[in-house]
Image 1 (tube, rainbow, N blue to C red):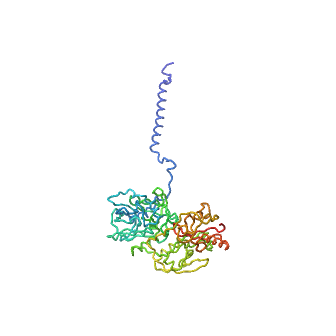
Image 2 (cartoon, helix red, strand yellow; image 1 turned 30 degrees about the vertical axis):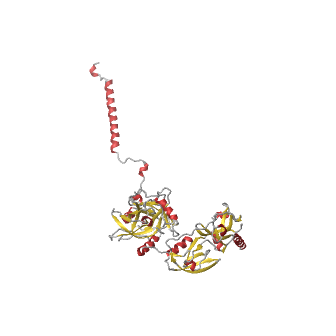
Image 3 (cartoon, one colour; image 1 turned 60 degrees about the horizontal axis):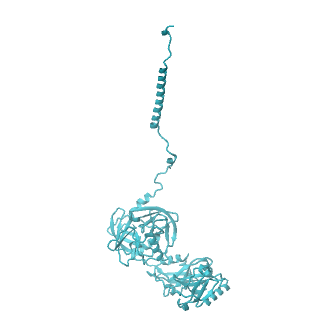
Length: 509
């Protein structure tokens, strides 16, 4: 057979090369496809957590619009005080010594708020410098801050939001509410904000704007946490509590509602460390409005004055007075030659209303009287000896400072034992504890007397509405109360904090 008519099989090496070329082509196409796919395939899905979003615009829940409107009216207040060995000063960003014009409780709040020295502010040639906040309330330059920010200041400078500095004059201050009114001269076009006419509700959003740590306009947000807080400011307390972050230098700055109105002036915080823990107090706008109006007109604030010491009426005291429920305020002492004394008000009277408006408690009575002007005639509804009566009082002017009368205390032990009540008594004169009443010489710490706050050295002046001169008078009063079916007896007691009423159970002793 001719070799030319026979088809020879392909060489083995040829097939190997062809297969290799084919595999290489396929593999190359696969690689190319993978590479192209990585480059041109769109919409690669990101991790699931990055897909969280809403259809709402980013600024729907923002406070930015309110802040833009109000911040130009908020200022930084810088004060200089000429220091002397007796200078006592509370500045907006620090404190030195104490303050003889502030009530002790609010002074302690200020110490917590501002620390013990001007924070980060240098001394220079006998001058103390401090910083606080404030806000303009009229286009002609009236502005509000705290009394303790500008008190005893020799110079006050105000820095506005646009960085301009002005010298301000102190028009007047009111230590009792910690409000001060200042005035910048020379302009009639300042941006200003309005004091709110309506009280906020607990839970309302608020914005605090101020100058914390001297950093300039800073905004924090929170809610109204509570109303009517008492922080010890001479019986006229009605502070707002907010949880917006307030720090050193915020003092005197405004707290706004979402309408851009000032609902309060920041004045103090509770803080173990000096920084914000979410408990701040603001003077309500209604108080600020009244005080500013008086300061603007006369430079001072005058308040009505009764001339009594009062205390709350507890359920036990209400029972002793014959009241169905605890309400009103109990007169624990009447100062001599005061409007109350001239009107015939007695210790032990319970004040139930002022000008036919019910009195809730002792603080409510203090606020109502302080809001009235000296010389005003007021009608007080009282309970005395279980009977209602009405007295008319012509109010006096509240003194700037009322000196507490120091209580006279005996240091000797001994006396008549009332073991059932957990106390021993002796005539006050025999113990060197004054000329009136009986002195408590010893108190059992686990007895009823101690539970109700009686302490060694207290002087019992009255028991059951009658003056006492010896321990037997107290025993007789207890016996009379038991015969009348009463469960407690009222004692009028003179202690280190003044006069007060204390209840004791009559079933023992």
